[in-house]
Length: 145
Figure 1: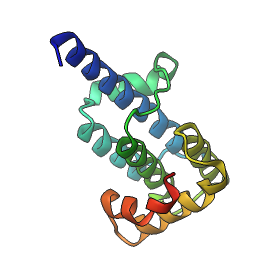
Figure 2: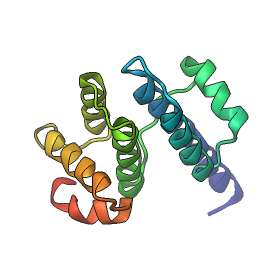
Figure 3: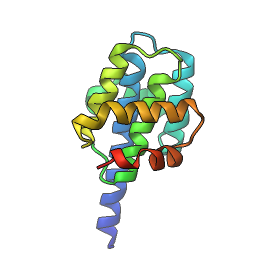
């Protein structure tokens, strides 16, 4: 891989991470209540994705500046969906709009529409039982076609 390809991959990763932060902010806010436990999860995920606090604030203030990006790799798609379901359920109160949005994201990520309800429920159950993303991915493998 030459420098130009490497730079392109880095930019793609940054764009995907920013898109992911925008999606998480949308998930946290869709029920009309963006609380502190959701914000702490958002900050943690942002840090893991190399997004600074100032970049996070910029994304939150100007979401229209961030283009939706579908992760290129299957593992990253699942990790992002896991994070979205985690954001939906972190406050222990799942609003109908949050559930609807999680299903929309799953379909946008390319998961089969007829398996999305079961996939989201499986991820949610794994989160509630304390399983990490790798364990949840293993348990969801048959739905990831």
